[in-house]
Length: 551
Image 1 (cartoon, one colour):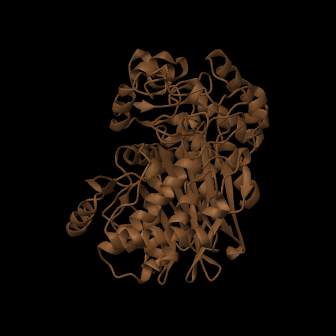
Image 2 (cartoon, helix red, strand yellow):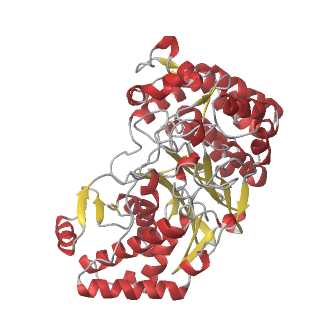
Image 3 (spheres, one colour):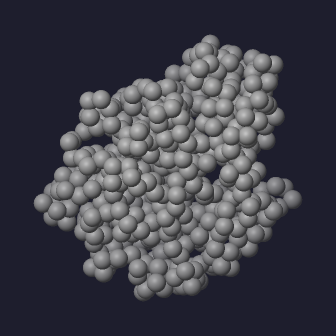
């Protein structure tokens, strides 16, 4: 059976799973893990998982499966991601680990984008967008750039897959056409965004049929999106989305609604293959997505920990203090120095160098010895609205793939006639014109997606990534520290409690964090509060075979 031959009954079952997954966070019991089918596994968004598993069962490879899963999840989770989502980022390991590559499908700013377009006013605030609760860079047509998701999925499939996109689109088409019950959580979410959705004709039609917001349990269908995806499937390519009739339709919608993206911007867009950033620690090699993704920050923290022989430090407050300060230093650099390396000098080599790691380690050691915090500068900025999928097949191919709208429903605008809700990639720029991550023509914004693959003796053993905005890099850091540095199994690595800091004095810890260490952190001057982490989903090869876990 091919993925295109899924029955209507099976697709309706997928729809019900989507509704459950959208209401409930992807958190079974803490640190849960399970063995998976001999032909492989896809873990992440529930409806996408099922489509991906069908591809694996039918003989497709991990890349085929993760693309089918992503396309389906883009329909099933319209708050978190979408076909018009701003970006995707992936790392794959194929041919037994002999080829490891990153795929960058991040959004690009239109050619008319200016560095000062979102410049804060005298009060320090970015001007309001359509919705007075969110800024101009976060809502409305100016907050959307060229959507990168489809181009990224096409590139990863063309380069590493064995199936055609027309086949892998079929579950997404059926789900958009036949619909699924609208989850209670999303009913509340669109009510909160009533002001902007009602101002935008496409979103009003999609989410407010008959002039009223979709109610919990009401069937949600997107026939315009289904028709567009079916056209792409018949063509066997996403080309028309960027350089054909669909691209012109999208560009016309931007023009009519005061956006900046033109047909020339759509046609110029290309997803990219890139070399992953890699860090070796013991017998493991960690391969993660390069800028503009979040992987550099994770590796910079690990590099500083490595320089201080962190794994040899006795467990307790000093070791915790050292890791927090390594995280704060890396986030300081992230906030101050990072941006699109094609548009300015970004010191990637220096930040990952042995000398810089030693310099950081010396500062951290002095702070730990003195029982003090290092100066901090960053301010937390909560973000949500992402899907991550990890996959592996029976031949040893691994894939980690993240796609996103940004925050919930992205720009909160929809291309009328296509049912295409757009992500708000421009919100990921820094609004200050002089910043390395300031907006600019055809520039790609810094983002938090951090798909990662770990190899052992050259063979892939882990694919992982997360959802949860700026909390993703730190949550993934915890899992990688447990798995690759301390050598713990996947289930224990996922179950390990996590903390989050972005360079200021704030430290957010999960409820399971030891009370004694919390008190110790407070004595050192950290402002410690309880809170959630990002959701991590991963698949790994263990002694007893392939396993998946998520939390």
